[in-house]
Length: 152
Image (cartoon, rainbow, N blue to C red):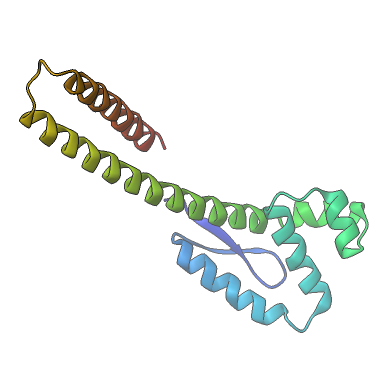
């Protein structure tokens, strides 16, 4: 996993960390430090909004700060914005793979049930052909899921 840069209170880069939980803890600490300082709180809101993909124009309206100032902040706080984007993407990736595992398990169970039923059938019956069709479709779907899992 790549190292993630964190920022000091003055938005300069400090030590790097490698785990998402370390980043979340450090940003939680940052939340507490900035709670009383409205400008710093506004800057933190800016970082969160930019990390979420909000354009400067909407942030300008919401925070009542000029776009020129926001662009300047964006350059200064780019590492923090990128870190928060990384955290969000990692959480989405974890959710996707968890749901993908569940789909693979369900498809595998269904395929096993079809295979069990096929073992009890005479291959000359018409419903058997339908079961073979289901088996093929489930197998292809499983292959697709495993290909998706392998691409990261």
